[in-house]
Amino acid sequence: MKKLAVVAFGGNALLRGDQKGTIDEQEANAYDTCLKLSYLVKKDYNLVITHGNGPQVGNILLQNVAGAKMFGIPEMPLDICGAYSQGFIGYILEQQMRNVLEERGLDRDVITIVTEVLVDKDDPAFKKPTKPIGPYYTKEETDAIIKETGFVFQEDPRGRGFRRIVASPVPYKIANRHSISKLARDGQIVIAVGGGGIPVHYTRPNQLKGIESVIDKDLASSLLAVQIQADEFMILTDVPKVYVNFRKPNEKALDMVSVDEAKFYLKEGQFTDGSMAPKVRACIQFVELSGKEAIITEVSRLGKEGSGTRFVLS
Amino acid sequence: MKKLAVVAFGGNALLRGDQKGTIDEQEANAYDTCLKLSYLVKKDYNLVITHGNGPQVGNILLQNVAGAKMFGIPEMPLDICGAYSQGFIGYILEQQMRNVLEERGLDRDVITIVTEVLVDKDDPAFKKPTKPIGPYYTKEETDAIIKETGFVFQEDPRGRGFRRIVASPVPYKIANRHSISKLARDGQIVIAVGGGGIPVHYTRPNQLKGIESVIDKDLASSLLAVQIQADEFMILTDVPKVYVNFRKPNEKALDMVSVDEAKFYLKEGQFTDGSMAPKVRACIQFVELSGKEAIITEVSRLGKEGSGTRFVLS
Image (cartoon, rainbow over all chains, first blue to last red; front, side, top):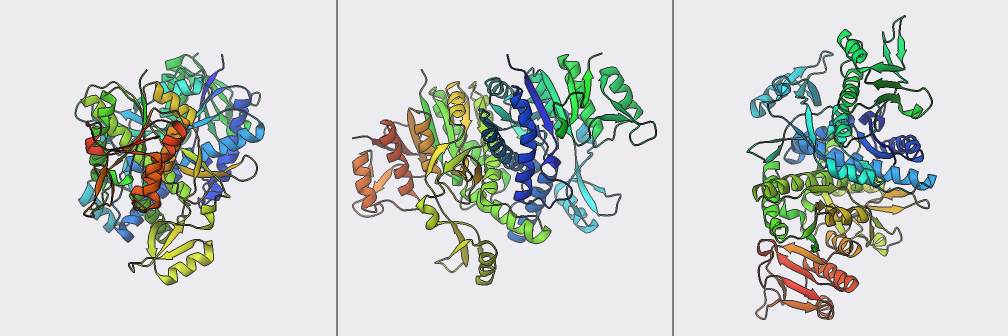
């Protein structure tokens, strides 16, 4: 039996901070990422790939704002912008993965699933939005938008203006999880849960509706890994390992941590909030609920002996 | 054994000409369409749903133009805009289909596949672009864009300016056709080949690349129906039947036509080019290649006795 792995990486693996985000740049980055992921295909893993969408959905939100201003095109809510980004990123990843597989003589099909993820309307996160999204606005623009929509805004500490913030609710069920599992175990490389999935909730009993929020992509990916009984959960980053006392004289790279140790370090504030902390939390969730191991590792060192930080039950 | 049907409908079923295209409008239209499609689920069909994206991708192209002008966001090529639209439309259709099924007590899962469709770079269509897309430009804007990109433009006969035209190549292979078939035969309602699919071709041997063009959605849907050995192919429209001598004193509704009759009427110019002619061609393709029947029918009369125009081999 082949092992089934869920591998998550960030949207910035496809659109780096120093890039404008042309399609050529993003395709080249997608190719590089897929080349590294092909190591797992060679190792005969069954594979589900999940990805972030931060920089891409940021651009899509701006395109929406501009389209409304210049041409009067109705602005789409956040769930639709997320759906745009799933189609876009899924497509370029699928295409570059097909190209890499072909070059390497690896005979696998690739499939992209648009993925809805269920969240709870009563999640306390909706009372306390934390996740900044979209463009910066002036005070006047912000006031006008608030009046019209009731959106919540936050002033940028670096003085770039005001930015909308939305809730980041906890995902509890991945739609299509059974199909994702089946397709992946059938040998297909499945691309799913893009950008943490499109957040939906039940309004009238059993009527689904999109809800303006952003699900943490690592947490959604970890949940998927649990719900499809994956054998391994991997998060790819741009640092070789997880560190404590990061960038201090007593900095220490972690080779292996237990769930209890990881929780202790989290409480100590060892991991940055928008970056390593959610990754560590996602790994803890997978290890606790599945009893199996999770790993955070640098994409370029994927599968290399001794690379990354392994999370174990105890 | 359940029958497998491929059902195609236009993007204007979700965004009507008299609408602005707010998300509420499009969701309500998606719900209505899914309600009508649920008749086929009740009749115990296995189902693949395909859809157009004309009005939606038109808006997405405008959002791209506006995003570039206002915020300097790199404009995405047509294949990426198509991928945006597949994510978007697939998501709202999937969601509303889930809602309809739940209300009606129909126990089926729904899945959306981002779909690439292969075309041939040497297709003569690329020498003679015919399909207008995106916004209207002034003569000056047009000249500047042509200089920068080499795009082909056409003056609007109604004086609205200049509009880009792209090729409409013949599709020859649907990516993921095996998975689409498997999922549908497994009872899933599969949404695929949105907007005729994302057109891709081989550049270097066996390296896939998007290509700026628009595949006719009826033709791509018919090809999918052939390639997954569907039992029936249906195209939904807003007229009850196909007519000859349409809106003339000798107008005649067609109940059943053979492939030869249909070809004869096509040659006579009985069917309008951007509307009924491609639908008839798609039906001819399905009937000729599969030996089975195709039907063009009004969405609201779906499955009603004696409704629609049936296409038969002879």
